[in-house]
Length: 181
Image (tube, rainbow, N blue to C red; front, side):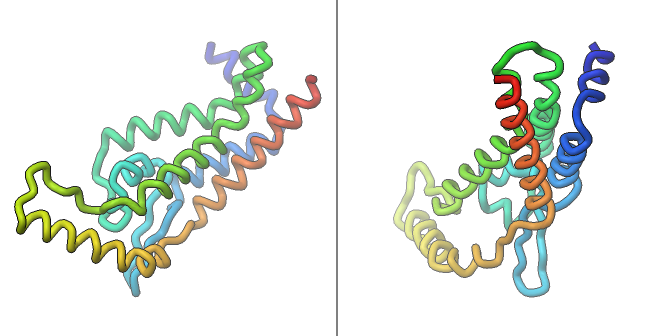
């Protein structure tokens, strides 16, 4: 099986190999998002996105979930290896595997975007007047400052590198599909 994988890797063209390397570097080694507040900067890598999507406040305070990192890192590795599928499996749908890295980026971006306008502080299941009022005040305060806060969140070099690499892979996959059709 390993020989077939190496053979499939050898059949990839140089630009696809470079695109896979760019996506891997962008996802695992360079920050994807950067939060800048004054002189304080905090970066988040793409393989930490599952934890940030689960709790957007982690964007500001850091990610500490090793299990989420491991599981989402495995998903990222699977998506990076997906462009090898058309070279291993003789199935027409396998050619769509070139779209896997771009699809993962788009899904994560959409989920993060949909999760951030929500409440940052969860209301307790049995809110009393003091707790409920304080939680409501905190959420209002965060939402009023969210426009200012989210102006300090930017896509970093890793995000752009991975996006360009995944677009190159998607274009190669679409081109291959049209050539075979």
